[in-house]
Length: 97
Image (tube, rainbow, N blue to C red; front, side, top):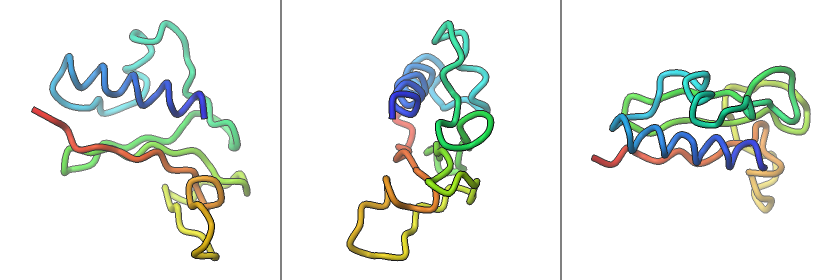
């Protein structure tokens, strides 16, 4: 959770400075003075994509350790998709002008 929260905060700091989210997470390294974008459940870095509508998708692999492209669906509708979804997706927000 710490990695995703740090990434989300850094994304907002970037957006405030540049009026849009970065096109890649690596651009946040200078803001953080460290690389915290490690996917805690999968291999490699957190997954990130800037969307056409000004929002972003930030996620890590789910409990299965596989990258499912940011799919947060679950087989059980009564469980929290953040913790038990195919991927653990942080809510992206539309850019504010």
